Length: 314
Image (cartoon, rainbow, N blue to C red; front, side, top):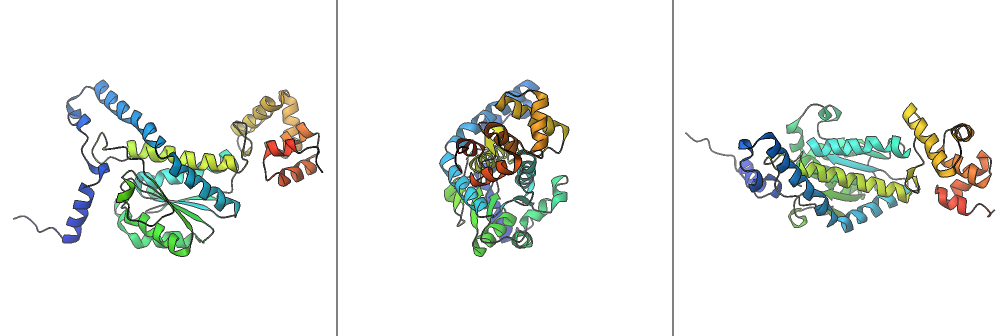
């Protein structure tokens, strides 16, 4: 006897079946019969499509960056919200910004359905709780000065939708990243970023192309935002934290490459600058002491290039 399907679950089934991210990819239909090298070639060829698809979304990504920069300039924060792979990618990007750009750990935060334990152990059912998404973002103290970025390959993840709707109600800025067409996303947000990468090599396994697209976009948003905030000089990180031997030596190398000083001289200036590459550079180029270099950087809104160019001003 066939068990009667609950109507609400049937509706979900039909909705999922219509999503591009849940469809079968004809290119890999017989992948279980292929050799290992053939399997890898199929995956590689599908992955190659991702970058070009993201190119079409650059105008929307740019709008998202503008929102994030404006939020940061007003001392607001960016919250990533996701479940499963999408949630892990958000937490990852948030975690990598402090050592790379010297940001406060609270400035960019990742919220994943099921909490941080879901980073290492799948908790699939937690994504179905819409009210929990709203609760979690409120617990983080989300305000109208902040921005919330939902990440969901399918777009329809209840946990993420709940968080984004609550963020909108509070009055904050909202961004949504999904791998289905924007017209399918029935959400009122400030910006939709929708790289439609097509069906996965393994049907529904959005840790593959969709995950790759999401990772690239998150990198683009935070990197571009940090450039606009003066965290980069030329193409070098100048606000990194010297809290490991690798970062300490990278700081010295950065100073050496930009100024032409030798290793010992770069180390000396970094010590005088309290470990700050930015301060050391302004001290070197402008022949300032630390206090004046700090003042000039503040006047230049943290931009090294601007501080150097204005060195003859009062």
